[in-house]
Image (cartoon, rainbow, N blue to C red; front, side):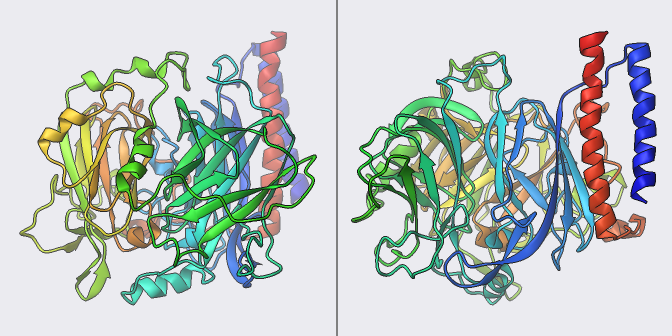
Length: 597
């Protein structure tokens, strides 16, 4: 079978090779990268307790997806779990292709022992992002990994080329897996204190006698005098973390795909779902190793001492082990203003180029008239129809069995409602609804995230980045517009909102499709704290939104349209590897006319 398959591919290759040479035809276009992810359970003991975690190709965390601006990315996912699965691409805008977004509102889940190939372009983007499973609290068991989008060679980065790069995936962690945690939430209880914090899937260094023996911890090997770009992602369940490297300054240079004014920090708060890049120079005495710390924030830090991840920074000429107390954050959470001011200090680097040659500051967002306002208010979970649920504007989102854009395409009525309220209403009891925002294509809107819950929350919008123009304590009112930063606000896709506070963001609705708005804290997201924006170009001609992909899965009201897949894992994986070989050959072939014609 493999020989026949390869012969057919070789025949195609020979034909296209001849065509390219004889006709001068180029197959180049934008370059592409391809990955095959086999998603499965493995047993690991990151906190010293054997447990089931979700791995990709046997790795936890998963491998990096590495691309360059405008590359096409293919990720062929084989689901070897015992439940449905979807990947989503945190911060990747997937312009015009919400079909590839990997959340329940746009995609049917991949059934167990099926595969599905995501195909999208990282159009006009650079920076640090990550992927993770979007269904049923699965991220609490792993399944995450980093995404790096590099600048094109002709567009310089706004700092000297670093000597190396290091990625950190940090997050709170439970020794119960996601199915057990779902049971806790389904029973109406809170998840409670996590069992620890992982750094790159590993538990803490034994910095105190309370840390059990035998735990594998992360060690980062560096050379003295060199500068490294450090990308840090909070992939945890629900806990904000403070990240720091003992005795080392961290120069913040990038926030979720946008270069920012460079500011030095000794420590930095990274909320759930957020990503940053820092430059760190190895300029300390090598008499000992140094602690790398990620610790819980906005909690009783004394009671939550165990919720601390500790790794080791090891100089190549180090003379001894790290010892003594861990470094502490410079800001005190009992002084919320000082904590908020750290986030307010993040400004856009208006003179630097991002994914395009023109400076990031050439888009004058502060001069655009606001065409709509949405105030999205979160409250503490409440009972609806006998179950504890979380809400936005009094609505706990109920995911329809048929994804919404698929329902539009096939004219399935009654799947969802376009009546999500623009503002919260106190006189209407909370309810379960499949209610989404009917947004206007090319509109320019402000969204106010009002957090009346008791914990810090992170909010994210798929398909977009937005300008974070203001945040403050209390309730937002119209006169707060006078405090907006209309010049150099950072643009990002996930923003924190402190309890009893609000955050205002501005965004231009230029990405057609159906896009998820959610809280990144997994417990609240699982309980329904999300909605979607439906943004349709009334003059659509195929240029602003791609058509449904040919490999789309069907479910719900359209499940009868789904064809069965043939499940022969060995053959499938072999064919995928042959596909990758063939794809590489095709890329080389596409370059032939460029160099020889």
